[in-house]
Amino acid sequence: MSHQRVAVRCPSCSPGAETAHEVLNRGGQATVRCGECGHVHKSTLEEETTVERRVIVSQDGESIEARIDVPPDETLAAGDEFLVETAEAILTVRITSIESVDGARLEAADATDVRTLWTRAVGNVSVNLTLHPKDGRYDETESVRIRVPGDEEFVVGRTHKYGDEEFEVERILVRDDASGYDREGYDFAGDTVLAKDVKRLYARNEDARTRAWSGW
Image (cartoon, rainbow, N blue to C red; front, side, top):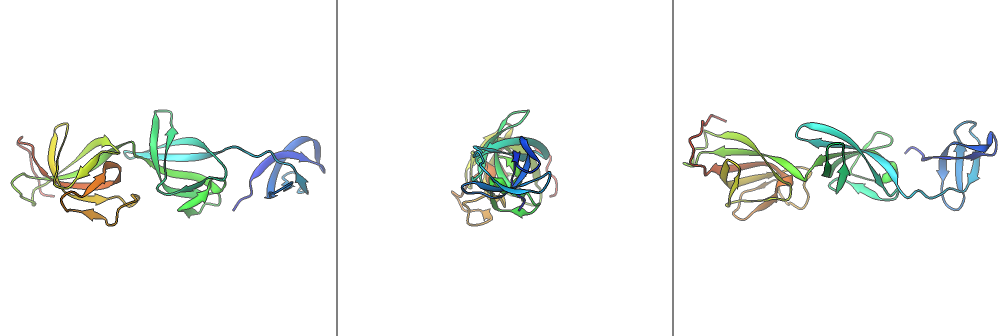
């Protein structure tokens, strides 16, 4: 783990101006090492209220970079959700992976040990939908994508309608980064999965329109 860096005065080479130091040990007066001359000494540090961390947001195949401020002792973990402000919008995101300051990939870490949070947007999500004809033929299907609020519920056995698509859900596959589910696939009537946790929906088309079905 890399040491935290702070700006303090060095009694050896810079008693009148602050220089970059590495924090070797906290508690009482901190032990620090000057980045200019290597001198190790004691120094009183002002406690930081937050630290800034890099966030990469994945949304519909694109990546957006942002920054967040978090308390330095806060533990961040895969699956955590929070708001992040980007140049385009304020998004609700979920942590999918954590990169530490030394480049390791972690499931959880204190904010001071984090270099980058890899996330995906879950406020509004695109859901992959595989439809088969109303007459029950499974050898002819169509793959479409619908965009819905992340907290929308899909229920096996229930008919849903979004825009031009009307379908009855028959099976739901759950994403790997979803929590609170005890299996990957759900196909019993009443099984419910939030849109942000859906990997793919399998459904029977309920739309009376003529569709150009193709082999899947």
